[in-house]
Amino acid sequence: MWSSKRTKLLISLRREKTDLLENGKVRRKVVWDKVAEQFNANSSVRVTGEQCANKWKKLEEIYKKVREHNAKTGNEKKECEFEDELAEFFRSDPKIIPPATVSSLPTASAGSQSITLGKSGSKEKKETKVEVVGRGDNRISDRI
Image (cartoon, rainbow, N blue to C red; front, top):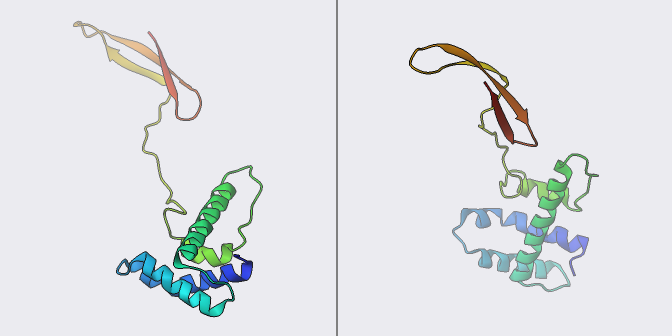
């Protein structure tokens, strides 16, 4: 039912309704029913608003999966059939392309530090050895 030509028609009709879908003043079902009405006027295949909404959701999922796959190193690049058409909708959508995050976890380093023992105030060197095991797993063993 959803040939390439019909899918491009759906994308085009969805583009025309972007403002209605994003401003939240009109129920999504009403907008998708309008998209279906226009689709039916331009195609020999009849669809409902629900079918259009489901197809759009599937396009989002496919686009997101391809982007995630291609972002991983070592993966062979995959293509999304409607990537160019869908990119304009999803390039700034955080649920499709999450914003970059930065970790604020402190890093450990090997070295020595002075510590005070007992009441006398005598100082002794304490060596700290840091052994990094795996990703983000710091194990510290102390030698006195």
